[in-house]
Length: 277
Image (cartoon, rainbow, N blue to C red; front, side, top):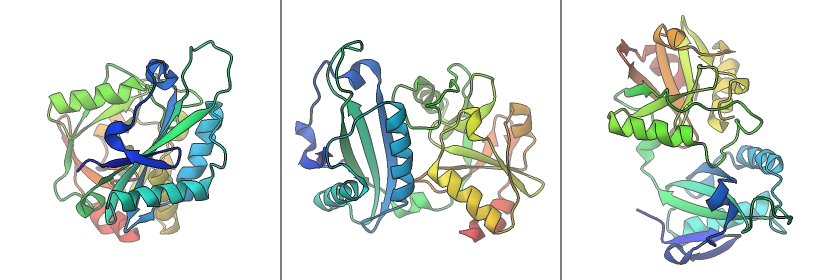
């Protein structure tokens, strides 16, 4: 169910009354940054990690945040909106930072605003999927490797087009390639693969999002004695993998059943990886 209210710069208002100027630079040029966060029973999950990534991304965009904006005020705004929308069990939070109005070459302060949205989700979305995903590989639009690759930046057309292809071909998701032709992630998730009881994932240097859940999985698996190696992923390597799973902040882990004609299992994921949570 869509939220009835949103929060703009910490002020709650009706969602149907929210508007931006037609010369807004995020709308015109795609200059923006967003975060997606999970809330359970009104508790915002891993906020400090999301906050740190936000600060890094905002600095790279040279965005100046509103006065008195900090992690504590952001938490107050999020929890206030969750309560206002009655999204008090499982909820998805989306925070969008957008530029002010103006031309791309106009001399001005690079101030920004932020919009918070919440939506209720089913608790099962956070659990391991019973039926494996069918996933394809999107090859038309690739993701460039640049200083902003690790952050959730607006205007990355490769994600939208990968998701569109997945929808058209009835896949559950589509994998995205970097400019070198390596697989780096899916349209909404980081990717891991298992080979001979070792877990692999592409490094951030390959251009994938520096996922909060990704970092959490790497740390937790290593602490439990499961080897984790970061290395580039070619299509050939992926099709030789034993198991594949996807992760993001909302959907903690989803195992993949098929990519093209390759069928994957899930024994290691179910018996070893899930047990470390």
